[in-house]
Length: 344
Image (cartoon, rainbow, N blue to C red):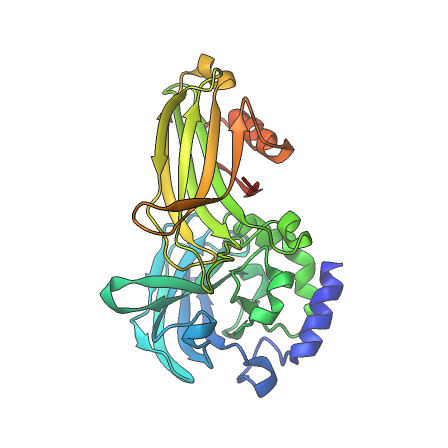
């Protein structure tokens, strides 16, 4: 079904092809496009990625910014990363920068990929994520230099929402057949999604992506608040200022420990990437509950809860219970899941 949807959407935007000197047409750039080149040398085991230009970027009222920056991260190991210089956003923003990723063997190259993020940069070092995508190298045909246009299209986010944010990069392939390898993308980008399928089916419910890991030897329970999705402020005509509060509770309902993230201002899909560690002995693990609450900070003394969920002994649902069980069985490896926020 996903393949059929992809073919239909690609026909609607008039995809012109992956390879060759192809520029953005009027029908494919209403929300912006980014041009990249890929050149792989098996002999030197280096992949050179060129960030050429961004075309017709979204304005500030559509999630854009006055200045932009492109950031690249090699997956799945996440050890090599680069970023462009900050450029003034325009109808045709030139970057013309190249970056060399090293130690990529020919045997492994098709199991790897690149995460591409576009950031909006403002004064006082404030920045926000405009769009992102994951490009598996198995899609590119790295036996020759490849030029790739990535379309930023808010109108297509329901189709690729499991990979991207509200303004998304959608590759313009020569045909839609590559969508049939969607399992390759999901394996590279499990924690880089905008929302779960469950949320998409219910019209975009507020959600939070949470990563859990437990080390039974040290008794360290690590909870990473990664990102939120579809946070709304019904009372005001803007996205809310949100923070996440984590509370560890005993079986009797007594608070053991608590932590909270910093505030993300005016972002419907905020990126947190904050980790908190709780000390829980192995014999205590079956008897604790981790309460996760998302708040809208309205003023210095006023806050209102957007939603919550809980994991552990008193899990709020099957997804939460499954996430907790998977964490216990993962032997210290982080397990990431999206959770729909329950109303207060």
